[in-house]
Image (cartoon, rainbow, N blue to C red):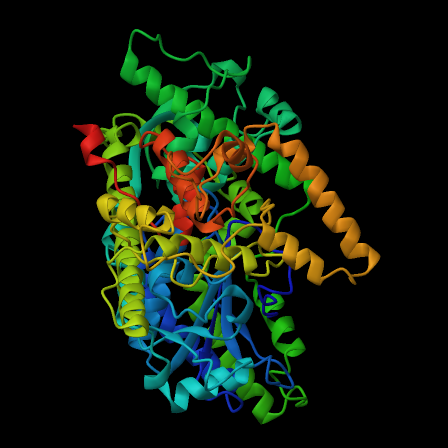
Length: 631
């Protein structure tokens, strides 16, 4: 009766879902009331699970009655279910928990798997921004048929007891948004009909001993498929002999039976090539396609059952099932009898209640007992008298259509389109918020393009301190920008105009780069005013001069757009003045060069993905294709 540790403190299987059910009477719940609740829940879900074949183990609930309840270990019902490759088992389990929650409003239910709070993953696009895996412990519950998220502003670091009390007293405050509810409910809305659709019935030809086992215990097909699908070299040695299920060897006659399994099991059998062992009866000719397919599928089931039986018997992993003795011992360990003396009237009353409870629950735990103790049950079945005649002359319906196994492209595309639509709505929502925020901050049209925004965004990105999680983009990166090409070039021209041509310059102070190679008299004046600088400044200056001299002989200066170009008129200059102008390095405008380089890179991509478009997208800038060029 031990509760599985929380997801943050234990190593668990990657294909197992865990769940726990807490009644509102947190510390006053007794064993009797918990047993009564257990029986009511089993009776509620039994009609939904009776004909369902689980992949590895059925949905079960166990009691946890700690002798000394604490804030983290309260009386509750719990269970876990390994779903393997069949995700439908996991979501059917979620449906059952919602069904229980709807019928018992005074219960709070937790569910998680190896990925953590997987219900939140399903509703990831609609969650509060503050919620993440690190702060989701003891926050997510199912109650009264809805998802509940304990708010951070009410309980910053909630314990289990705190969260359960909050759900009882302030249920309306914790109910998640309708978008979150819808995202999860869309995942389970087709159940229980989808659970029935997930079943696949097929005719197979198997040895009579295997037919007997499946006739008495149809749920054992899951263990047979598991034994076949997970086979290894050691287990294949058991299949080579077939000691348990082929008493007559190749002389054994194959009989036709109808088997129900999940679609996942059917796919695991059909899509694996398997060669019959030498001791196995000869299969029908391949010319008889239907009979051969039935016999081949039956071969895999029979060999899988042999491998499962022999391996469990050899390893001694046979469970005891829910025997009365094992159940009584668990009650004693949990303090159910409250230290009463055997034979006392109160002890006898508790014993009678426990016996009645065991008889009622055993009706619902039959499948679970079979899964934990299949060897003993198989031995019991094969100890009964049986013959081939029992299966002759029977008519079975044809196998279900298995076109779903090969024509799943449409369903997959539909699921992908649904996810794509969800992502687009999420992006649109956040872009709209970004526009509203930008409009409120600036008081201007958010769609109006300003070339300086590109440089400002880049500077903000470069100045931002990165962490171990990586660099972060500016907050308004989702802002959509409509780029006006003509307006952009007008802005460029205004920046690059000669001093005499424009009175108002857009050049910002400090916009020139470190590559300042101006040898004018003004620079000389500045240098003469700083003759008293220390030796380090003198070295930097001499180093800069030497670098400038080397760069003069290169074409580097021609690759930059300059803030101002003092080009003399033809009638005012001389050849000597022209030579001086060639040697003049006017200031370089970093912002203009940045935008120009980005545009050149973006243009060279020719509409394809590339570094420029990726970086601009991160900055929130989306340049449209050049309409004139496309024409």
